[in-house]
Length: 296
Image (cartoon, rainbow, N blue to C red; front, side):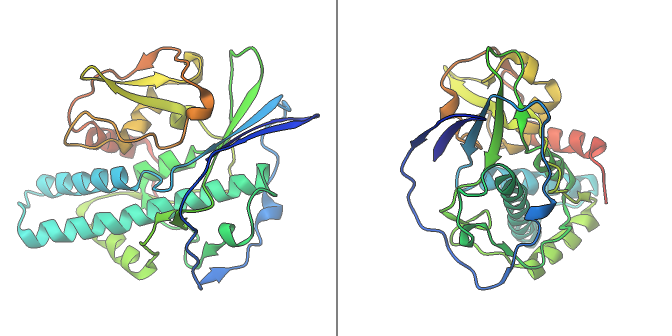
């Protein structure tokens, strides 16, 4: 995991933390031809750029549990009550759908790397699999992934821009090793979930601006949960907090690990949002975001 603060003109200061495990290579790659399409993000020429590295799992466990709970909720709406076969089918579909969300997260962050840190990664660690163009993603997670992008921070003494990127190792296309991308299984999972009523949408990786939802910090202490504002509150909205809850487990109020490593921001807190949400907040948020997320 790294933090890089880079002045537009001047020296660079880099703090590097050790990162274990090796990147798993796959044979089925496409050569990259989209770096030239990436355009400049912000016209303000911010004074500093900070890079936050995603954890290797990219929130997959939380995505899986939310999707599994959402599909069970859709089954109950259809008055279909669970058998072991149904439970196994839902669980398997949720696993493959989570894979697709992780893959598209990787593709989104990969595009950001080409824009802001083109010399940081080698060509092998930024390759992409075939059969991932216009991949349909469960609409609420497509909504969240679309908003992963550069954030120009306001109400700070100095101008900062924060950019989420993926680590070079400990994953394969964003999937935690030893999982691998199976486009056929993913297509079957999409078909099954659509029959249940789940909506899907594509992610446009060429859009580089983001919102600050991923810069919220989960905190669970003294038996109380809250989302802490790691930046001045003016950088966050209730909608961003709602988006973050998609990545929470349904069976308890305990938060997941931080989706992104926010250690480079320090421990400063500028208030909090979403204190002690109800059990199942991830599923109710999934339903709410699905209503506003564009569908393919």
